[in-house]
Length: 210
Image 1 (cartoon, one colour):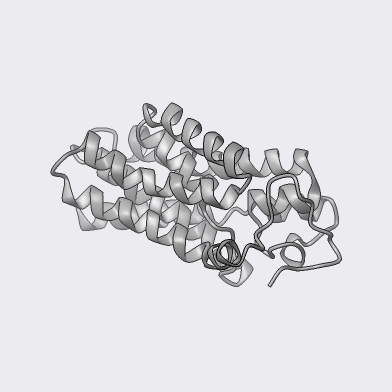
Image 2: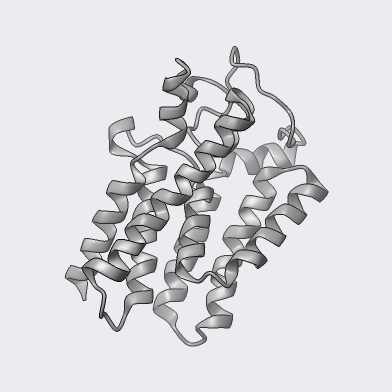
């Protein structure tokens, strides 16, 4: 199993290193890492490059999580008994690649869109619950970061409900959650200080957040 897990992590990481937001910015002759929050994720693409760029980044980051999982499920390990576990490890590789892409000096996004793609590919039943939670929280608070963090919290809760007693999968789900909170440290600090940007606020490309 160890060798299979390594294959899953490596394949996921390779796909995760594809930085949609960075490439979208480059097409517009903008290095997205130099503006807004400085990370090449969906929210920063939305705030610095506009809605179209944000949507493209969101879709691209979700697809790059779904594709390697499909490869693992149906091509590489089609008959594996632990395929759900391998799915989680593949997705974890994607999120690590997204958050810490080697070709961008290990400075990537915050992994929420990629995590969302993993959750959808892992268990499609979670999609309506995750969407309702994210959209509802963001609609009420106007904070994308709050919605993102609560979706990350949903993952281990979902594993507890759908796969009771599977400690291995639960631990991995908690790792996803931990990665989300680690990458959102600055957002959490701004939320506590009351300085977090709300949905709809544009960030000037002349400034970069601390």
